[in-house]
Length: 152
Image 1: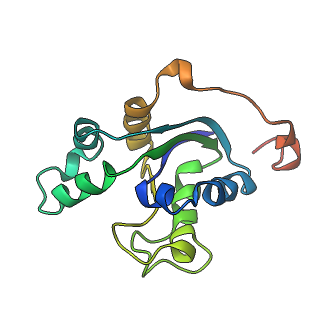
Image 2: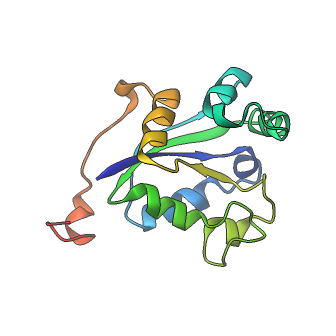
């Protein structure tokens, strides 16, 4: 079992696609254990995108991520990091396959609706930026027994 961070970015919020995207994760059988709407500050942006701060595109990235609220979610599931990233599709909505979230709803590299952690290390670091331990609601949905075998 893994946990990952997913952000519904400002374009997702502004386009009112939050429920549509959340439903896709729930339909897949993933377990949302924390969720909140927040405004990303410039400081939080620099922490979250620390590896990009010195790159030429960073100022526009910060401007975008701080432009409107985001919805931050902690999501649990089997191999959830790779499962979510596959559900998102390629970073650019123009290159993402139909059937993926970005392929179905995005036509931009930057306005690509959703961020998801790319590794267990990133997930751990990013989850700590957005959630305190007491905000995580660990639980086992009753439907789990009908969504995967007991030994998975």
